Length: 459
Image (cartoon, rainbow, N blue to C red):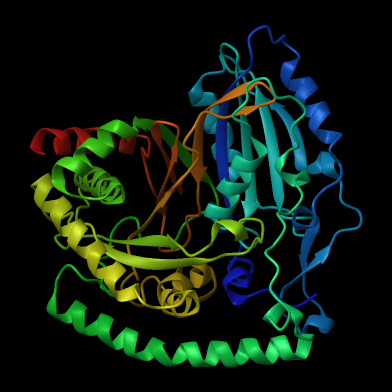
């Protein structure tokens, strides 16, 4: 098979024991009325019967002389589905605290590179009829947008539907076919030559776009460039252990603030995160005088490409205004900074956006190899992602999906991550941090609520 793109391979190149490069998701379900105590055990047995695994979930990363030492994907002919899909149980009393502790431990362990790079854990032992599913998948295989879309395809809006195929058994969506004479009808050498020529022509505009971004950053404090961020307690080397915290907020509350302030939903999410980071660093005695800079991923993937795998993500650097006391003034700076970032990327092709974004993303993935921290300022202080999710209640074999909480990747120089997704009428915040470098991470949840309440009171 052909070598994988650098945007995917960099997550394998930068992975070490202290820096697992997988993303994850924690889903909470409520079993249907009348479900017995063996519901999850039976569900586990049922999903293992779906052993016709799609090619995307069968592929294994490898490199050899035939790939000239580059990472590539190859089919695993000995795939063991029972290894990847596991049944687990919580210790008593089975509270959310025990679930988050287990999820934290699972998220800190590496995926086995001798197998396809994904796992799913069905977890029982929660109080009431609830159970959980924790999934993790290597970032080289999927970005967060593609993973969430695939989850949505595996669930149903019908609470009475049974025997739905799990995500790994879903057939790929049929791709649109081009007319005769299109790129799809060309021979392999012609497609390669056409692709190289197109990429070369698109790179011509990258230099001018970078110049424009630098000029704007020099003249406007709301615009940001890599390596302008202050040093903080979050931008240090990390260990392999993880701590995870999660909570839901009413989507209506956030939308109301956005409407009252003329902001986008994502602007308010960033303002909540900024207020929480300001309060957390202040209580640790570590709040810098200069405002923190967030790296905000931007999805470039089309809906019809959700089964393609890989990564299609650009980035915007946003000034979080953590040096500003007033919450509305902070939100205004965030709104202006995001507008600058979006304007800088407007009119560019996905290839051009990816090339520009690589400047910010490369330190995130390759920091474990090259130890950027201490040599230069951090490229940014924190990654804050907002991934749109399903808008209606979903079910899995009759069990209602109650919440979807994303887990992401801390790495050297980036000890803490905020990832948000929407589901039904809620925003689901997932906070992932280095267990050693981010003490009392769970306090950030209370600070997020305080930040939203302050915005509501001021709006």
